[in-house]
Image (tube, rainbow, N blue to C red; front, side):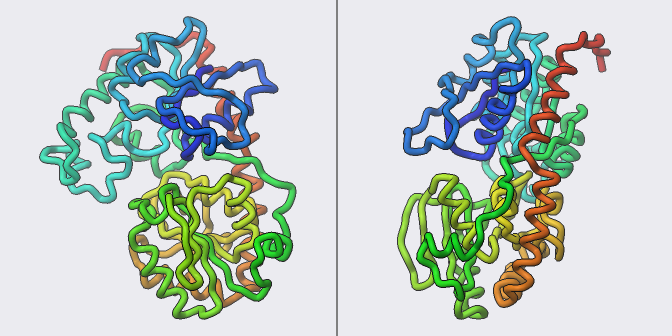
Length: 373
């Protein structure tokens, strides 16, 4: 099995690829990794698996005859799909919508998507309808097995691609128990009485799909309602402090887990999401989430049971929900305990590996002839 992704170390799709490759070790499936962009060793996670750097239009040319391909993401879908020989055994996990759009990772209510990316594209993607049609033609030629981590994205993909899409939720390693909050705060030098929130997104306050540009305003509104509140905003490329808003750049996973273990809630005003690993990381530390009810988020967070969901884009409702939770420590603990238990039951890496192994073994069986549409 060859797992292919865009970045060498960072990003949700890369993490899923690496977790799957590592998780195959006890099985009869051997795995290797390829990527399109090598990254500095400073980004190295706990994985020791090396990834070969390869251009998208060369990926299929280097597949051995007995290898299956599992593609997680690419910077050039037409180039990558066109490089794969017809008849190859291919699995594609849709980590966003780009495979079936003219370029958008998330259309966000695009007014022309339902008509097929008709031009001109309102988001200025060049030749969007031609690009979309070309990707669909290449997919039909390959007839890959498609999977998506959320029912939400699977439904969208089936509508646009007219192909079956399996739903396999993401999974991560789950601890036996979260680190005690008092212990985590002691390690970070945070007072036990503080009301602490975390905002985390790849790209930090530059993450458009995560309301990064609005984050300061959202935080200021929360702070006005919870004077003792402290927040760590994590994931960008800068660091600093603005009163009780601490800005950190990208941090290694262990450091992020420590922050989440110390916090009372994850504030996650995402505008578009498939099946967020950030939410799973929070749940694994017993941290309730406040988020907009978009995409696959409601499949991860149960409102008023493991976190709080609000109407997408309603910033006033988001602020009120965040303030209510931060002002109620007992409620934070209750929702966090529920989140840990629910996530451990539903979103383990072992379950994800088992689900994909089932797909790989089905691909080893003889394939029936496909009828011409």
